[in-house]
Image (cartoon, rainbow, N blue to C red):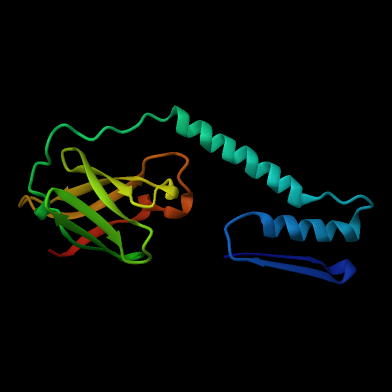
Length: 180
C-alpha cells in the first residue's frame, strides 16, 4: 500500500491519496491536484509518471538482455540434499522451509505463497532460488553456512538481478536453522 499526503496551508487545502499498489501514482495525483490551486497551467504529473514508468520498464528489459543467464553447476553439492533441509528463521522476517524431495531441494517462505520455488545447485554450498512464479523477476542466490561440525547452520540470500525490486530485501535476511 502506498499513501501520499500533501498540504497547502495558505490555501486551506489538503490532499490524501491511498493506493493498494506500489507506484508513484499517488504522488502524481496529489501533485496534479495541488498545482490546480497554485499554477495557471498545472502539470499533469500522472502523465509524467506514466512516461517515467515506461522508461523504467524499457531499462529493465535492457538489463535482462545484457545479464548473463546462470547455468546450474555441473558438480554435486558437497553434502546430501537432506542435510540442507529444515526450517530456518530470521528474527525480522519469520520462517523459511527448505525441503528435500528426491533429487530436488525446494524453498518456501512462510509469508505468502509467491516465494516458493526450487533451489538449483551452482557450486559448493551455493544454490539459486528459482521461483515457480516466473513473473516475480526475483531469483536469488542462496549461500548456506556450515558450522565447524560440518552441519548447515543457516543461509543468506542476495538477488541475482540488479533489476529485482528492492522490496524483496533478500540481502537483509540472516536465516538461522531452527529445526531439521
